[in-house]
Image 1 (tube, one colour):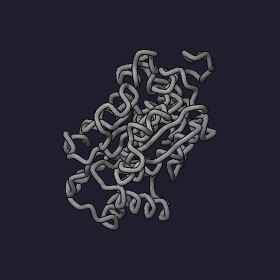
Image 2 (cartoon, rainbow, N blue to C red):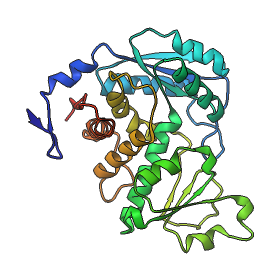
Image 3 (cartoon, rainbow, N blue to C red):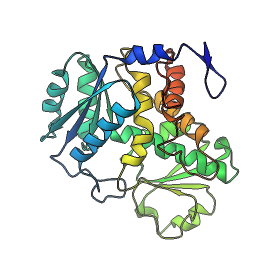
Length: 294
């Protein structure tokens, strides 16, 4: 038996890799739509380019195989059939470039029909944004339970509020541009700690040094989460991503983020194993993977 960096015991280092050997993940990218980012502008990395980058990341950071699946339609029924027709070795599907409504329809239909677990880029971005919120609170000396967080464009990421609540954030409120005349955002932020600006509508200076947003290129944020999350979910017949699993990603990211950073570096050798361990615990699974780069 060996001990991980945080003092928790794990099995022999070769067993986790063996557990995931032979498992595949499909990275499906839709090029039919211009999927807007949180700020409403176009992506700086095309869905097909992101697909190849995510697939390469999975191959590099886990023992799993990654299949690239480029598609040119955003029709949920067509995409569902494409996913259900993938090889049986595919344990999870990661979807890039699909809008929220279509993504939800695909996830729902694939789950109802007993297909592999479907994750979206928005899921991993949600985890990264929530973790950045926790570290911003920490840098201000505010415990999450005492933190007051304002979100603009909350409908863009419907999983974010439940994940923040599961991560211990004590007070959440939503702000819309139509509120500006009665409740100016700058004045609101005088009484709150962190602004999550998903809508990209915050006036300059509204929350200096305490604003969290999704970058135009979401890949650097998504890359922090995806390999470890997949390592924890695959091989256990998981059919749906839960709030608890995403919140576990948040805890792992926040724990290993240096005090002077918003999020850990993608090159942090603890990253994959930390997320895999926390998500596995949350789901009641044995830890499936220790990062061989440690």
